[in-house]
Structure formats: structure tokens, C-alpha cells
Image (tube, rainbow, N blue to C red; front, side, top):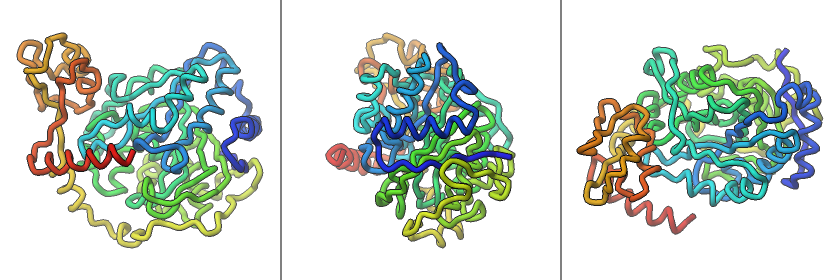
Length: 389
């Protein structure tokens, strides 16, 4: 029977978090079941955008610190990685997100390595036909000896709830997220894409930050809900089914999880999930609020989303006046879409991973929208975005 550990944890004191996680790991077979000295361990966090840790929108930096310390004590090499949202709007906020969240500081203090998925390159993964036949996933997901998924417990206005399953969507770097959103605009359709990501990569452990959750209009605009919980397990779907039960939902209420159930990513039946730790059944979080538009989103009207993605679509373009012909963009392109001499980009094969944009030393690669009016609007938004963060 699949096991999910639920532990009480009142605050983000690293010592307290370490004690709770260690206790949970004992119930999962102990750390030695998962790691040994010298292993490269990737912590795949939730870094949706440039949000501070106390916003409840991201995996808290002190939560990550505690896990880094536990792994370093066991002689592991620790990476912290993600690709932020913002792809639909044609922004690339991942580097800033690592700073604003405090994760860059934590990494420096604890001897971990930041892996910005927008800069690390991609590996092609074979997936099912409903995910377009191939997928490009950030290389560190395959280069690590162990991946630990570290999602945030929070609501999602479109997907209702986002947890361990949805968190792996951040393995798709750069603007390609927008392409998948367009191809699969509905939560059920996107859930099939995310299920394929889980099947393509090997994640050995899932540790969910539910100490300060987000309720209401998540994943970024909701309010902080002090849940005081840590959820742990080896099955992402079982983890999410357990979390859903804690807020009064079952898997049928969360359409984005349907794809994982269909493709056998994990256990979907709560009756077949053993709850252990401080509880023997999912503890209810009284007063936890779901998104206000929950019912209307369940009806599913996704044409507007597709139109918005088309309107805001951005692509990398090389400004030849700024280009110094160092060919960093050419060498970093994983699919060879950039001509070495002319610096033109073949968009028929470009996967919009943004490696060229992220790695250009001379800021010659810019993200430009196909629609000029949209470009003007988003420049105005970026100004406000920078002032807010």
C-alpha cells in the first residue's frame, strides 16, 4: 500500500523542520534508502515567480535550507532548480526569482548549487501522442542521481489545487510552457502533459511545504493559510490526493490530476493510501477557502486562454547590432536552430527554451512579441512588475 507521511510543523525554524522530516523519513525506510555520500541530489522547488518566501506562493527558502542541511550531512552534492512562470507573458524571471525568494542566499550559505533551468539546456524525452510526441525537459532532471520534488501546498484558480503533480511542469524551461498551455488549455489536457513529464523523469521522493499554505485565489494571489503540515512520500499522486482530502476535495474535483490517474502515475484511491506520521487519516484544514471561480472553471471555457496566449506570444530574436559574434547562442541551442553566420532563428525547429536569451553575454537576444500592441502593453506591465518586486 502506498504510504503518505503527514507531520505537524508549526514554523520555519530549520531545526524543527529537520526533526520533522527525519521522523518522516524513518517511516519511509530511512535516508539510507534514498541517498548515499557523493550523490548529486536535485531539489525541484516551486519557484513560480519573483515572490518572497513569506508570500506562501513558493517553496519557502528555510524549508529548502533544512533539506539541504540534511543532505549535506549525508555527504551529498545538492542542487536547487526550477524554471519560473512568466512564459506566457514572454518574460524570463527565473534568475530574479532565485534572488527574491532567498533561495540564492540559502544556496550560498549552505553550499548548494543553483540550477536555473532556463540556462541549463534540455534533453529530449519520448512521450505519448497527446503530448505532441516529444518533449524537452531541463537537463538537471536527468543528470542528478536523485530528484526530490518540493512543491508548495496551495490553490490554483484554474486547476483548483496545485501540489506534487503540477510542480513538475517547471521542468519545462522557458517559453515552451506557453506552447503546452496553448496545445492543452484545459486542466484535464494539461494534466496529460504533466503526467508524461512524471513518466519521463525519475523522482525518488516528494516533500511538500504545507507549513504556510495558500488558499483562495492561488497560485500567487491567494492568502496565507497556516496549515502547519509537511507531507512526504514516494508517490506524487497519492500525496496530492491526501492533500486534497485535507481541504475537502477528492481527485474528481481536481481535473489536472485526471491525466495522472489515467496514465498510472500513482495511486488515486484514498482508500488504498496509508496515512502515517502524526495522523492515520488526512487531517481537515478548517477554514481553508477554495478559489471563488471554482464552479465556473469546472465548466471549462478555454478559448479565451488560447487567444490570450496567441496575443502575448513572444519569441527570441537576435539584435545583430548588439551581437558580438561570440556564438554563445549558437553553441547553447540544443536543436541547432540558430544560423552561425546570419544569426537568424529557424522557428520551425526552435523549442523556445530561452537558452540563447539566458546565456547571451551581450544582451543581443531579446524576447519580442509577434503582436506589436501586445509588446507595448507588456513593456508597461514589466515596469509595474519590477516596481512591485
